[in-house]
Length: 80
Image 1: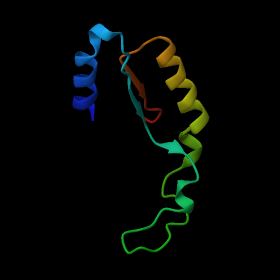
Image 2 (image 1 turned 60 degrees about the vertical axis):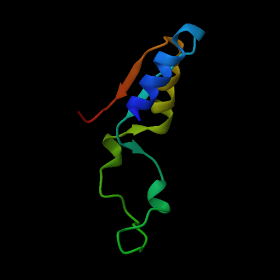
Image 3 (image 1 turned 90 degrees about the horizontal axis):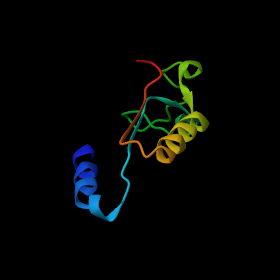
């Protein structure tokens, strides 16, 4: 994905197109409600501590800030 976005960035550089690579870490969400395990059964509980993860709202805020600053890369790993 990074290679594709870097290619788009270089091809559109003179046209003023901004390309930012956003890399969020684990994000607290309710995706586990529809997640399945390897055998196809519902996952149910998340195996991770969501209290230590960024919220979707925080990820969106950081992406919007990165876009406004025209950042090239937006890393958002709260856990390391």
